[in-house]
Image (tube, rainbow, N blue to C red):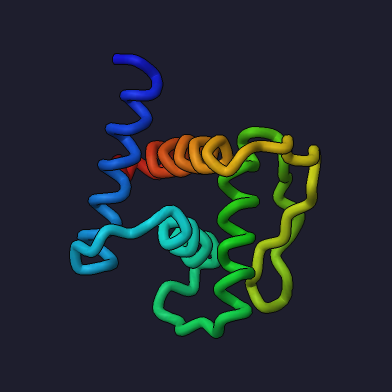
Length: 117
């Protein structure tokens, strides 16, 4: 199977499983899945978050997802339990479509590591 086809298949599997589990089958978009990963990484699964915290959660997720690519490194957890990352290497300038593909690859890898798919 070609790499693009495999990514598409794995992405759709992740998207469907998460949508069934967390959105009553309504298909979650990329941002929604990134948000869920942020909540997972924070470990405060049953807490309600304000809008500014939702952005912070997405930032946590992006750092965690791009850590294996060498862009971020885990630094520490603060007194409130929030993980912090430091930038190791600046992200390359990518077009929107390229960014989406990179994030989908990272998300698929994340859920494979977690043995979710």
